[in-house]
Each structure stands twice: as structure tokens, then as C-alpha cells.
Length: 108
Image (cartoon, rainbow, N blue to C red; front, top):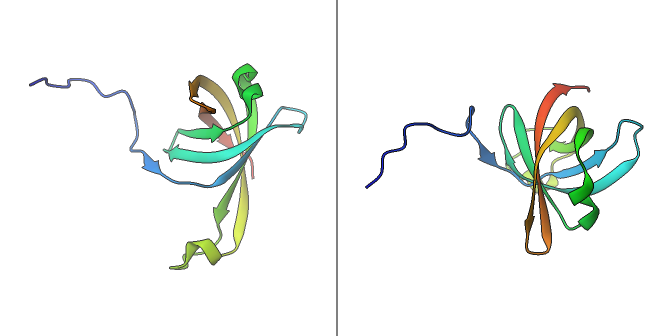
């Protein structure tokens, strides 16, 4: 039996699958994907684009979130929330690429 004395994450995480578009500082689309985990300060995005392995540094994220609290979230209208973020980790998972992005600030 092992005892964990330190936790890696600073805030609680939850799983969520929302569409996300990752752009550079000029607004050009780099990759599209879906969120896998979301916390107060970071999110993990999965994409099939191999070019995601070359993404480093600061990015702009457009995340599509449900606009209301409908019990049928699939059919509720969406709103796009924009964040400034920084790619802190890139991992290959089979044919997918996982990007862990630290959220710096909400832009809109």
C-alpha cells in the first residue's frame, strides 16, 4: 500500500467533451479538437492533427460551451468562449495528440 503525499493538480478536474479551436496570436487556426479534461486553470484537448506536436508557447482557444442549463445539453444552443493559454505538455496517444493547455485569461 502506498500513501500519496502530494497531488499534481492544483484544482479539481472534470471530464467534458466540447469542441475547441486552437489559433495562433494572429487568429490563424492551428488545430481543431475536443476537450477531454477541464479544470479552473487548465484543459486537456485531444486532436487527430499530427501538426499539434509542433505547437508550443501561447495560443488562443475558442471553446464551444452550452449556453443554458438544459437537461438535454446536446440540443441546447452553444456560446463560444475565448481564452488566452499556453501549451505546457504535448503527448502522443496512438493516433491522437493530447495538448495540455494552461489557461492564462478569459478574453471573451
